[in-house]
Image (cartoon, rainbow, N blue to C red; front, side, top):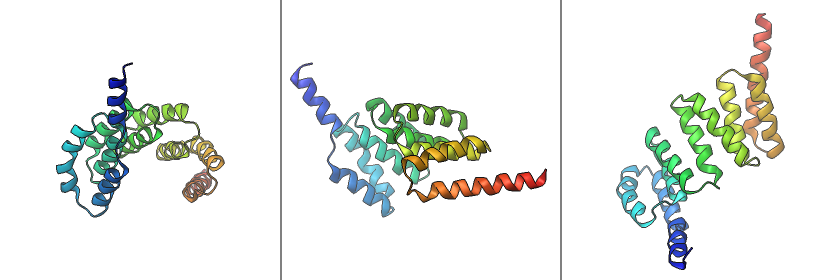
Amino acid sequence: MSNDIMLKETINNFIPEEIIDALITLNDKGEFKEILMRFPDLLKLYPNNSKLLNVMGVIFADNDCKLKAIECFKKAIKYDLNNPHPYNNLGISLIDINELVKTKKILIRAISLFPEFMETYFNLGNLYKINKEYQEAIKIFKKCIILNPDYLDTYKNLSWIFKKINALKELD
């Protein structure tokens, strides 16, 4: 690979943190229209940049543009196969549009690629909970606890599932 190609790939894969921080700050302030105006120019400056696409996907998802978010996450994965965040965020967005079969495939794939990334296990556990596959959810949430014993939402989900199982047993 020539030095020119390597330099171009490095530039495309690098984006200053200040730009990412500015996008997040604008989103936090409810300035979605401002972000939409800047996004095309940012894509011209940083084409194929997984980090930019992932952050824009999160921003689109936050602003109920679920299909646009999914598009960004898929592109982010395409341009950087080594980042667990777009996979995880794609899974969350697919849950949001009730694409549960696709969600399961994406999250299981992400876990196979990033077995130490707890957030993906957590979202897979939530998917099993949504599908009322409580025993599978329990197994996955237990893995979450191993990876991050301080994440309280895992315990809340397990508690909810155990209460649900007990309530179902009482109906029998």
